[in-house]
Image 1 (spheres, each protein chain N blue to C red):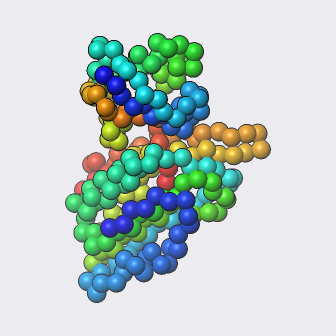
Image 2: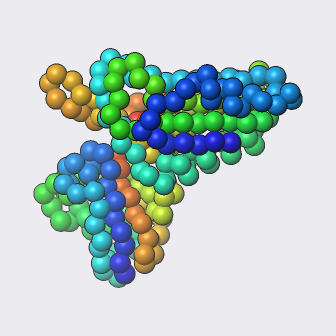
Length: 85
Length: 145
């Protein structure tokens, strides 16, 4: 299935892109699995998605936990803890 | 209820007056956040930001009597002393207005997808999130005010 990925702030800068379309293998059905999938690209991806990095995720613009499911056509965003206000 | 995410500055007085035009309103509490120290850039997640702020405002309106409310958050390049954020709440009495205003501000800091980048002489750095902000939002979970 295909999903749209978005990256913000420090993650966007480190990964060198604000967004990408990605075809996921059938085994990747949760946010946690997607994180592992992206970490496996190595290099900056390995560092950004290292298990000890505090990365937050949103699916279709709702903040979610790691176990949240992903469906075809979803917009999945990764970003650091927020610092507005 | 007005939620705006914008580059432009806002007029605090005009925003407060705009939610005061009802003779049942006896109190308006407002908070304005300003840029401290140096220049900064604020990035946000268009779409999600407005949704998150609306959810926070709706939650405040369930807990307290909120007769009207305006939240404005800026993004883009900001200079020292610029206004960043405004939360203004109108109610019949001050207790509800103060509490709802503080609640919205505390949750906004931990839930609305904004990220600050500070520009200093040595270069630009992303601001780290603060545990104190999480604690400020958390206390509303037990607090029965």
